[in-house]
Length: 160
Image (cartoon, rainbow, N blue to C red; front, side, top):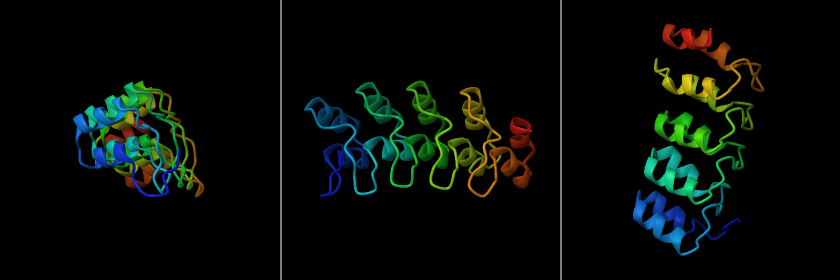
């Protein structure tokens, strides 16, 4: 449900990093999948900020882990962009689509490779969950291609 007047109560609680306030709002029947102007639910912001307790509470209460915003990004894209491994684990366990593509054709794996800075744990998680390392974005660049371009040995070891 879209909220043209701005962030709903659950959004505001997430942005305040208040797990008890999020749980209280949800308990009162507030919509865990309310959309803001960008088409994002509270799960997007909790994922971006690495709020594992809030992410877990939202998923437990039925938040849609595969909702896409206006850019076709999902909460898993946000977790990958900020390299939030624990959040990504929760999203994957909750059924997140590891092959979802944003408006540029980038998958969460592509984003994880781009943001890896030599870290491979999130890449390993996404690959083990079935993410396709050869799926190309709109510019014809796959996560595997990106890893070769970056030239980081540790990352290439995962995707080589």
